[in-house]
Structure formats: C-alpha cells, structure tokens
Length: 177
Image (cartoon, rainbow, N blue to C red; front, side, top):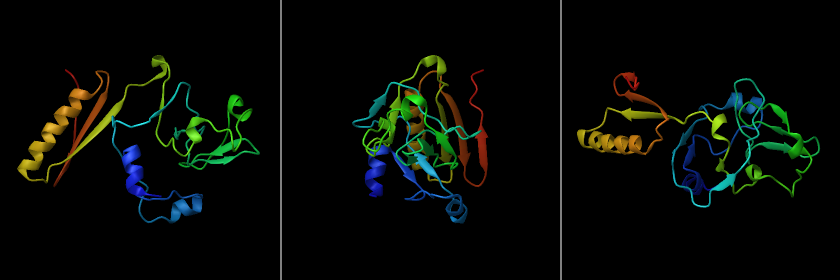
C-alpha cells in the first residue's frame, strides 16, 4: 500500500498501515489505532451513493461497511473492522452481492464515499479543532488565519469544539450566547 497516495486520495493518515484482523491481533499492538482525517477536503472522482449506509449493529460502534471489511459471500455476512462483530447484509444486499457484483462501498477504489441521504435523518456535522500553543508567534498567527478560514467555510448548523494544548490542555466552549 502506498501510504502517501492513500493520504492524497482520502485526506486520511493512519497510525498503522494495516488493520488488525482478529481480536488477538488488536490486543497485541503497542501503538493505539489512530486516524488523522482532513474534513471538507476536495476529493477528485468522489463516488456518490444515494442510499443509506450499511452500519454495524454493535451497540456504540456505528462503523459503516467499507472496502476493508471482511466479507463472507457464502453466508452473506460482513465483519466490522472496528469492533470485529459479524453483521448480516440487509436483504437487498444479500440477494445480489457476489465477488463480482459489489456495491460501491466495497470497491477498492471507493475508500472515500459520500452518502446522499435525506436531511431529516442527518445530524449536524461536528468539527473538533486542536491548536498547539507551544509554537512560535509567527506560526500561531498563521494558525489563527487558518482557523478563521475554517470557521468561515463551515456550515451554519455545524457543531464546533476547540481544544488548545501546550503546557496545559484547555477545552473551550464556543456556545453562541
């Protein structure tokens, strides 16, 4: 896997280049799994899906079917790569899915997919901004300009969190009062 190419395509950098495939592997890793994702990044050739995503049924998981999920075509189930729970495919998937007939979310080239779902079922977007205050003044001024640009580009209904860290860590409330 070309890590730089993956980051350029998806705007996503992982702490590991592979995902643990079993619970035992997941418990043996020394560095926690982490992901740095660039929101609102322009993606060339973004695949659109005009249907609801297939979500993991585990309580509190919320992961979505993706090209890295393990698929059992015979049993018509998929394994969540976050919590490792086996999930049955919905009937409209199970009736048609084969190794040669895959939905968009399972295609290797569709690691980033945008779902177009009814607005009524969508929660507002959430952004968590982090700022390292242990930087030189020039870098802080540049970061301030970047943060102002980010805030200007965010949707009006966005929920925004702001954390600064240096010698201490602070969580700032951005409530509109």
